[in-house]
Amino acid sequence: MKTRAALALLALTTGCAHYSPQPLSDHPTLLDDAVPAVLEARASAVERPWLHPTTVDLSAPLSPQGVAALAVVNNPDLIALRMRANVADAQAFAAGLLPDPTFNIGADKVLSGPDTFLNIAGALGLDINALRKRAVTRQQANAQALKVRLDLAWAEWQTAGQARIQAVRIDGLARIVDLNRESVVATQFQLEHVTRASLRGDVSASEAESARLAAFDAADRLRTAERDLLTAKQELARLLGLPPDTVLALAPIAMPPEPPSGEHLFALARESRTDLAALRAGYGAQEATVHKAVLDQFPTLNLTITGNRDSAGNALLGPTVDFTLPLWNRNRGGIAVERATREALKSEYDARLFQTRAEISAAWSGIGLARRQLADAEAGLTALRRQAEVSGRAARRGDLSHAAAKTAAQQLRDRQQVIAQANLAIQEQTIALELLSGEPIEGWK
Image (cartoon, rainbow, N blue to C red; front, side, top):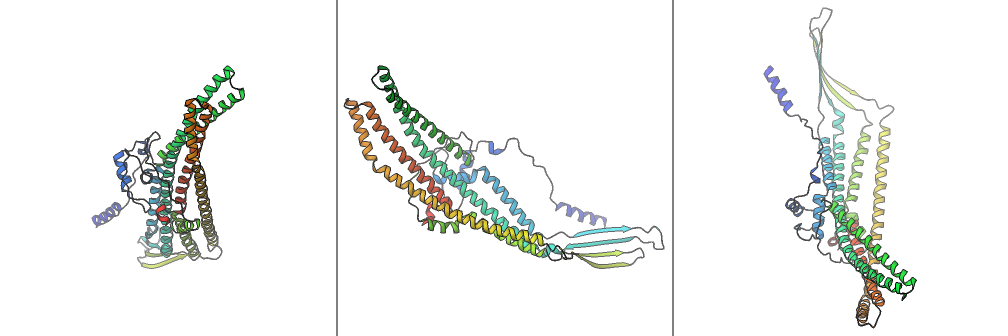
């Protein structure tokens, strides 16, 4: 008998979870340089509805799809969010478990009196209230887990899009830096020429000052563009989970097509955006919470089966039911809180819809403005290029001053900068419009 009891106790013990410490590391693996082969394999294998199958090769120029895939698999914030999603899944699992019964036993020895037996009492209890609310508790936990998963999907979509935006910024800013560098060389040459002429008294002080200001302005614009380019490169490395000094080659990015109407994109957003779906799932979880709060107003029930052998040797067996009396509280405060929370979530969802429509409209209008600016800038580009070429040849023949030729060349570079900035604005805002609509360009049709 003792052996059988020991075996039963051992079986119960082996079914229990065991604690093992897991201290924080002084050097997390995220700080190590990623192994290219492993990273390429993970990025090439990632599957998302909005990602085309792509082969990632870090030694070759990265396509926009490759940038997005790398961001999804290697961004540290997304890795942490996936771990947080596992917590929600564990909570949903816990909500479906049955409550453990309770058991207690006691013995009393008669100190005086005719009875000689020990008074032994035992009770087996079960929380009926937990069983009654089990279905709604599971509904709440499952809806909350779904919300967390949808929030993760939205974070992946946003992170991949932000990485693509940084990639187009790097491409566009590199072109702007080159143009500004040419301007710095030209204005510095002109400043030196005017300074020498000023010392000879051939030009006025105002002309010399104008040349100095032009050179200073060109240098300042170059510094700003270089700073923006460096920021974009570091931000891309951060989004991809790579060391800050990582040098990535990026494939050329084609000009995107014109977007459909804002109304069409808003309709797509209402169907496709996972953040809106997450808010709906959160509202569903709150509905279950309200239902649970309503159930909590009713008496809580606990059933206990009690066995007893009194000191006279009488064996007794019977049930015990205990419950609360809903006279004053009846969980009215809890119900009011959960109903107010439900109304707040409804208002938050409506506000997100309003914000989505406004942001889509703003991005759509911004793309239209950038395209008009691009068309206006390109309209006179051919004439400016011809003028710069003619002026340069005339200056080399001595028929035109070098200052006039430099001015014509600078006008061409200024127009090319406007075109580069308009192209960058179109590409950035098109990706932003993709993020706002919840669909890639291919899904806009």
